[in-house]
Length: 213
Ligand code: B1M
Image 1 (tube, rainbow, N blue to C red):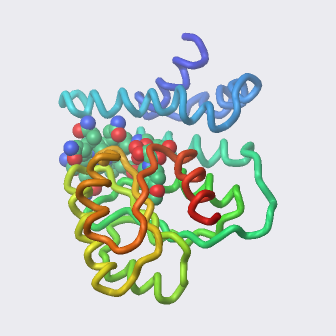
Image 2: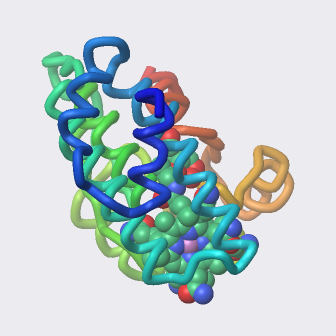
């Protein structure tokens, strides 16, 4: 198989045999982020498709997730770091009821490598915990991630709870179940501050930079 297809197949097969040498080879041709956004994401999309067709079980998807996480952890060492002074402090959380965190953690890496201080609250984070952390940490932006369809609705609830707590710092939302339209029509009306939608981690960085200026 060509290198790109081999990389995708590690994720699909959920195996790490030979992964690191192939990542090293890929690094001669692509940047770390291009490898993640290209072949590795392609593998994840295939996993999602197979899972949807009942051709994979959750345990197998977990193994794929492990490969993706290991790859991102390795590639992080090769990412450009912007050693500028701290641009701002951003809270990140996967919303209540949702365990998906690979995308959120990628957003953390990209932001942290580009001058942001990150408070990562992890997965299944209820609004109360976000409010508490906001008050303690005084972040500049609250970032919410979610991949399940129900997580989009949970973001609406979270925005309402934040507003009821008197919080109005910008919110950045992202994740596969979300769209720009849902963000605009359903989340934004429920919040007093700005609400922006990021389609991927680089878009998240771009938006964060704009929010801080
Ligand atoms: Co699940 N899962 N999963 N899963 N899983 C999906 C999301 C699904 C679409 C698969 C499918 O059926 N085709 C489907 C959702 C269906 C729906 O709601 N309509 C699904 C399901 C159903 C489930 C379970 C319910 C399965 C079950 O138990 N029966 C269960 C849910 C448990 C729960 O949350 N309560 C479940 C569990 C799991 C695993 C634990 C096995 C594993 C997650 C492991 C982990 O994250 N630690 C898993 C995985 C791996 C997936 C798929 C295959 C891949 C997700 C992923 O990591 N993508 C996924 C299908 C798919 O997306 N193709 C699927 C790679 C990642 C880098 O991309 O997260 O999209 P992503 O992040 C992107 C952007 O979205 C954006 O930037 C990132 C990259 O640049 N982004 C942000 C994300 N957050 C952002 C925040 C920002 C900015 C940008 O600012 C704050």
